[in-house]
Length: 244
Image 1 (cartoon, one colour):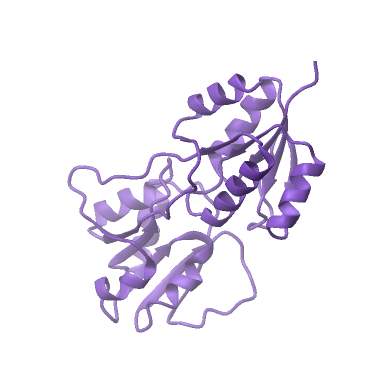
Image 2: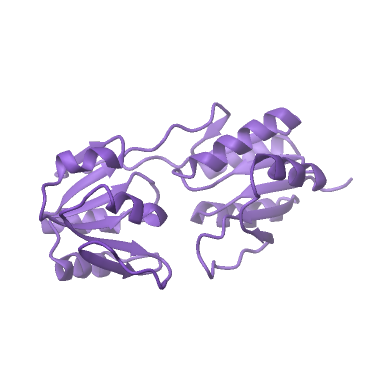
């Protein structure tokens, strides 16, 4: 009996773990990374890197590769690829599952300021504030919504692009420890931390902000596709094995 071919839309730590578990369970796994970082950590399965080139190109790729299943374990804010993949799978009658890890919630003693989008940040963060943007690949776009503030944007890779606003780039590759995040926030002297509600284990920055009295602005997740969604890796594996 041939192995079931599975496309794993990756880009999270959980996707890396799923790749290992799915391969051990007997699936032929092809992982797909968007290519947003120059040197992603290698995965234990065959991996393609880069965008698909639009909906038609992705549908053609998935058809040519004859995938039996698709598991979407992309970042919670990668809503465009999730929506597109769900639509393609529906059109091609390929079973699709989205893994969405639980969102962060404030711990006792924490007070977060929740916003639906970056466009609400100027109403929350006054001018001349010093702000750390721990918002991933779109930090520069979010920064443009906050003129008149001193902004520090974290990114994974160094690049030649100058920082055109007041502040600068902060380069760092996760995971980050609580000690490192605390030292960074102290060094920058920020009064605000802006984060996306990505969930997961990487909440050291939030714990550091609490310890230092730094205010937190938390950007809500976009809506996911209207498709089957689970929130634990055990549920993902159970779904995959039910389709094996």
